[in-house]
Image (cartoon, rainbow, N blue to C red; front, side, top):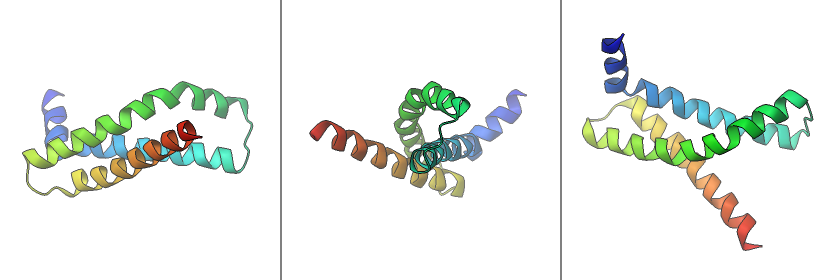
Length: 101
């Protein structure tokens, strides 16, 4: 078990899957907003996961950068870096837009 976790960390697959999950969550939030989905369970998951996912985006970005500096080119780390960078920039822009008006 520990050996598998170490291999997952070395390959960057854990960060890769976490980045995909984070990006999919924000896509889901966007779609529920655009299509005005008012299901109770969707609102519950939205409220429960919003703050942890907002915190996870920059943490995943920093982790991806750190892993890319530690090891040579790994496609899983590069993809997670691009995904988390996009999500972090989008979150930062939305915070700026909300607080500037």
